[in-house]
Image (cartoon, rainbow, N blue to C red; front, side, top):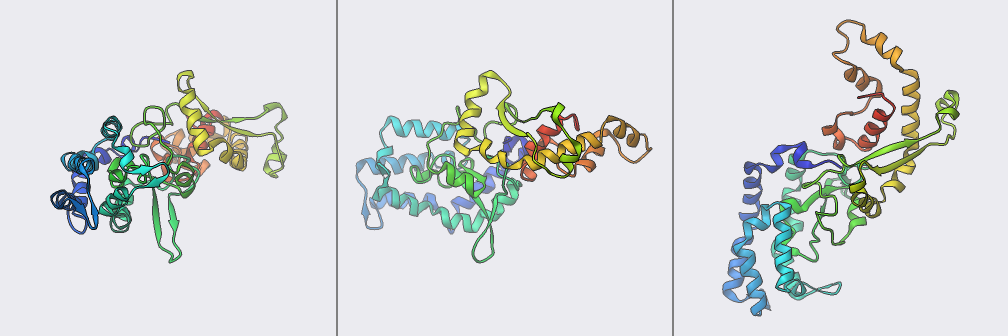
Amino acid sequence: MINLIDRNPQLGSSAFKNSYFSRVLNPPFSIFNKLSKYLIDGKIGDFSLDKTQREIIDYIICNFELIIVGDVQALSKILEEFDRKKWSREFHNGKKATGFSRAITKCFNYSLFRKKNGSWLAQTIGIKSCPYCNAQYTLILTQKGRALLQFDHFFSKHKYPFFSLSLYNLVPCCANCNLTKSSNDLNYRTHFHPYHNSLNRVAKFYLNYDIKALDLNKLIASEESELEIIFLSLFRESEDFVTRHDKIYFINEIYKNHTDVARELLVKAILYNNHYQKAVSKIEGLFKDRDQLMRYILGHYIEENEILSRPLTKMYRDIAVQLKLIS
């Protein structure tokens, strides 16, 4: 829900891009060399290339570095060029991939790349929670007990296989969001893209409750209470942006199941009120400031750049600010 490059500027650095590009350029992938050979031979394996397909491969070769490490805007412009030249139909006929599309998919070999470089990329990105929903971890366990990172292709790898290894098209996410988004065509101008914009700046979680009806004993006993968590836009101009995100990833539906966490925050807001905080803060040398004190009381990440370090952190932080537990 935050911008990954703002969180970790290394992800936008030339050194990181060069390191990533070399992994695609060199063995065992050597995609650039393979594409050049296809163009010279006029075929990919047993699949013969027609004139349009040769033009597409030539375009990919000429723009290869931009395709692999270009930013989101650059990738979008390439798609616009493909649409202008009506090249997209060479890759899919309705929902079915063409033979040419399957050949390009095999050339880029995303499955092998993920196997060889997925762990390195995951460690470099350095997040543990899904940037789309912040409700689940990005790691999954295979049947063999291996931990793997899920990657969503913002621009579908099935429709655009030449983007299957594009650095800023690989969004680490949870399995649910990856499945939910599927191959939907999204526009980075109107939808949240973790390498381009930030939801955290335009949306927040809000706890709706009746303060007059609060009963501390019932809250502590975890009895049912009228609590509602709402994901809403901070500004009128961002309402459509936030609504689209909620509609795709079911944010409000997901967070209806986490009122227990909100209930715990309400209890803490009542127990650890300003009088308590001021009293503890007076103990010399114990805490450097109020935020550090509240970090220990809350037992959770509370800084903006920590939102993707643990599931539910944005909700936790937003509601803690609302209840004046943190500033």
